[in-house]
Figure 1 (tube, rainbow, N blue to C red):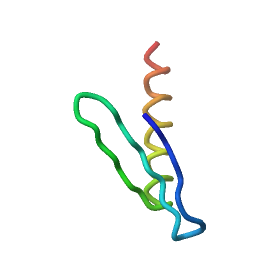
Figure 2 (spheres, rainbow, N blue to C red):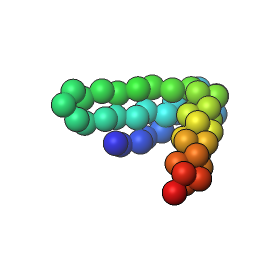
Figure 3 (cartoon, helix red, strand yellow):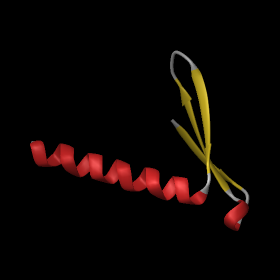
Length: 51
């Protein structure tokens, strides 16, 4: 996965590029990026709790 940021402030976007069987790019706003980070953190914490 490649993570890049283009633009500044509220006009800035985070780009996630996945290069697997199908190459995919996702463009997210700042609020979407924050939400994704929160979800990934919760998922990681839940996984660690199971170990």
